[in-house]
Image (cartoon, rainbow, N blue to C red; front, side):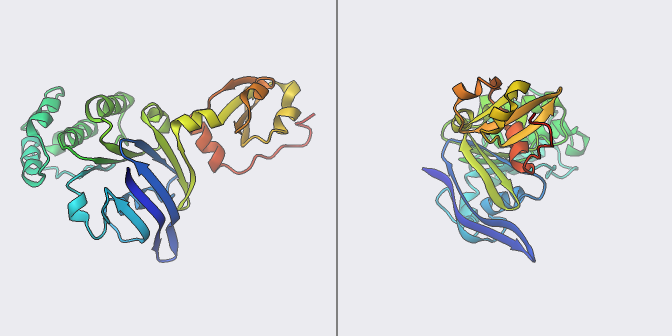
Length: 291
């Protein structure tokens, strides 16, 4: 069953096409990474999914139209943005009171149990908390809501590496199960690669790549090519090539790995490597390089 289903999803602001007729299907119980450069359309897609903006085309979230039935879907959807949305004057205990009063699926004891594992005090005001502690507070509030869909828009932006690792470890170990669906946007794609089940690359309002992580690992390969095999390797039409320590590193799509082993050391690329390859201009081979 699809948690999110989009067909021909389109959004235009004036003369700017933010979403250019994208098709997207996100199954229940998946963890999707939505990756793209600034201005690619990520935030617009999330806003449409959350029912914050109107759109053209078809979009269903948990079986509902998010624009016309937002009140219904928000009972089963949680959202963490890249900026603090809690008032600075609000105390932690008041935040728990507020969420408990407005959300029917909030479990205060569960939120408090998570906060007890942090250094956050119930009487502290949001304005007194560090950015990392605010992220922990947001996560505690979200984890205590029995939601079917969790949307994370750059949730660890500005946090140090320890807070980022703790955030994703907690998300995966204490929150995720196969009845929940999670969508994450981030520029730190290498830090979430291990938790994703699916990946979508978006650029200029269009989807560039839509694949499962299993298919990604089978489909793409990276080779540090021996100089003697440059011509043969380039004949296999790599998606991308760049120089590392004077050697050519090439990324291939749907080329038999047994064949690639004859060119040099073969490995599975990172999502960051693939992102750079797909978003970069086609490689230019200078005269004499193939000699």
